[in-house]
Structure formats: C-alpha cells, structure tokens
Figure 1 (spheres, protein in one colour):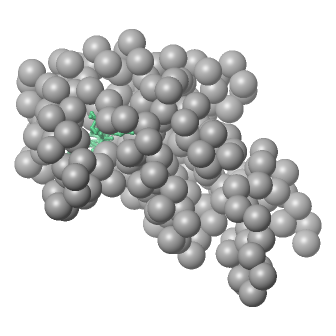
Figure 2: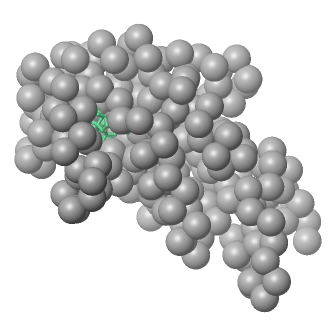
Length: 216
Ligand SMILES: Nc1ncnc2c1ncn2[C@@H]1O[C@H](COP(=O)(O)OP(=O)(O)O)[C@@H](O)[C@H]1O
Ligand SMILES: O=c1ccn([C@@H]2O[C@H](COP(=O)(O)OP(=O)(O)O)[C@@H](O)[C@H]2O)c(=O)[nH]1
Ligand SMILES: [Mg+2]
C-alpha cells in the first residue's frame, strides 16, 4: 500500500477511470518518462537498456510512426514525406498511436522516446492523455557527435542522410528544445551527458531510475 502511494504521488492526474473487473495493476495510473535529445543523442539505445534493467515499456514515437508509415494506413505517405524532410508529424496522429500503445500494454511504466517534439505535441498529449509526464530524461550531446552517429546508424531510415539530419537539427533547436526548457522550469528535467560509450551513459542514467520506488 505504501508503494502504491509513492506511485500515485508521482502522477498528476488519472488517465483512465477504473473499470470494473480490471485487475488492480491495470487500474494503476501509468508512470511516464519522456526521453528527449537531438537526433543521434542515444535515446533509443539507452531506452533499451533502461527497459531491460528497470522493467519499463519502451514506446518510440518515431518507431510507431515508421510502423504506421509501412502499413497501409491513409497517413503513410504523409508521414514518409514529413520524416524525409525532417519535419514533425501532426500531433493527433502521434498522440493517437502513443495512447493506443499505453492502453494495450500490461505494464504501467513507460518510456516515451522522441516525444514531444514540439510545444504543440506536448499540449496535445497532456490534453488527450490527461496527464503530464512524471519526469523527462534529456540527453545532452554535441551536434558533431550526433551527426556522426546518425550517419553511421545504417537502419535504412529515410531520414538518416546528411541533408535531412541538418534539417532535423534545425527543427530540434527551434521547436524541440523549448519543450525541454518547459520541463526544466517545472523541475522535471533530468539532464544527462550523452557523450562517451553506451555503458558510460547508462551509468549516468541508472541512478535516476534506481531511485524510483514504483509499485510494479
Ligand atoms: N554512446 C554511443 N557511442 C557511439 N554510438 C552510439 C552511442 N549510443 C548510440 N550509438 C549509436 O548511434 C546511433 C544513434 O543512436 P540512437 O540510440 O538511435 O539515438 P537516437 O534515438 O537519439 O536518435 C545508433 O546507430 C547507435 O547504435
Ligand atoms: O513525436 C514524433 C517523433 C518522431 N517524429 C518524426 O520521426 C522522425 C524520426 O524520429 P525518431 O525519434 O525515430 O528519431 P531519432 O531522434 O531517434 O533519430 C522525426 O524526425 C520526425 O520526422 C515525429 O514527427 N513526431
Ligand atoms: Mg531514436
């Protein structure tokens, strides 16, 4: 009971009203950490390690959009065009995909990776989901390091090329960084040095998650 209280203390609002017959854990309010940082700052890599070690579900906003793009959905072509030019997809599309991922999970602890990318994304999430994130993990990384990583990524992505990464960096600085600043002002931003090896970075990230005492 004590741990549940701690879980709930982290949460600002109830996302889903309890449904009769649902087990206790499904009724728990989701615990959400947004993970932000520029393209190639290591968000996806670290999210994988965090989810393995600390039992979070990893929701990659870009991954959801890529899956949608490769499906027959009506939005596929639009998403592909926006990704290729380094722009941001409409909030409704992204938030709907995130909401579905949260609702279909058994887990109640989530890393939402690469979102929100704009103030508009943030506001749409808070309106549609009905809650703020519990905290925001932010990877701080110099541009030249990020560009080098992106150009070496080799996952066949439409946006991992020199032209698009330049556009993405512009969008990141102008439109995504203000989101990080918003959460910094609220005391919710955990800034981590994103340089060094994957292991070195994970050693900086681990204590943040180790210090959380969550009920599931
Ligand atoms: N600390 C690191 N040092 C070197 N390469 C890394 C490091 N972390 C991630 N990478 C590699 O850099 C690329 C970008 O990392 P990724 O986790 O996809 O970043 P993001 O999700 O922020 O774009 C990937 O190919 C990944 O394997
Ligand atoms: O909330 C999001 C997340 C991603 N994207 C799009 O998907 C691309 C790739 O995002 P991802 O997070 O996969 O890239 P990363 O930062 O990990 O390299 C972005 O440049 C955007 O075009 C978006 O529009 N909204
Ligand atoms: Mg990523």
